[in-house]
Image (cartoon, rainbow, N blue to C red; front, side, top):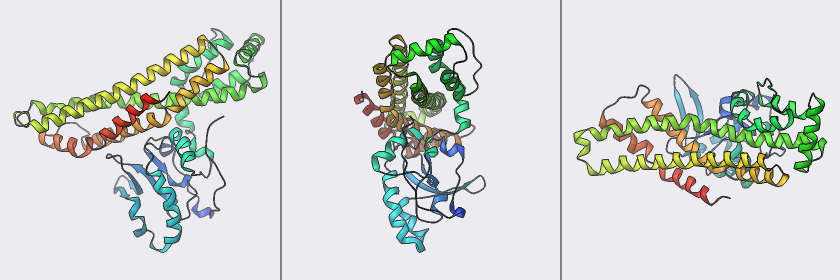
Length: 353
């Protein structure tokens, strides 16, 4: 079953129950504080976000006209002077959250449990219906071998991940049911326990689909950024400055290394999942699941770091362009800080089995 953290939350007035949007729930870098059992009125309407320097800040408002209102968690007392007692209690949770590298739902499932923080509703740690639908194309790659085991080469219409699981949980043909029985024997799972296995399988590979979707969106942006960032090297003035040239080369080397390493991890996941279908067993599935889930935190941390940096670059320079000095200053002040941290997260993944 899905691995989520949940306990009873403190009672809240109906007026204080805050709904958070799907985009925040599906994000790598946003944690809607409404999901937490906080005591400070008004704080539940805020969000924890990662800025481009990979610092965790509290976003108290955000709109197109006024932008994003951000404050360091340490300065929340100035916003809630009449709620100092409840804020002191809430700050125990918030200080733990600032050390989490990514706020995607899969990282949060592990990290919230590790630091002992509950959520108001386990659904807060699930992707939205719209994101699940968006990931259907990715999920087809992971579930195609499973469907072939049960339905052979028959083509099936699939519009959402739930369609795949429903087809497998309730086969509509005798030979499909017979194949499902055979699959249950290989997995050492009783036939009536197959739905639970399918939910486990679906959630594991939905997580992989989610992270792969993020990676596929980020890598082309990093490549575009690097082309833009390296153009100042052709400036005669920049080329004479050894320190700037070294900084630009360091940024290029680190970003290239990070994207190459994390892409290689996904290729390893693909190989392991294919091996599972060549040798179906309960042990092989547990091994695949353990490998993927053990990497959730590091994958989330790397992708979150890259995502917020590329988002800021696109926001500051939506049309590209800008002179060499302006580009160099942006790279020095906003891109370079935190790159070593992202690389350290990625390098730490090499020790995870």
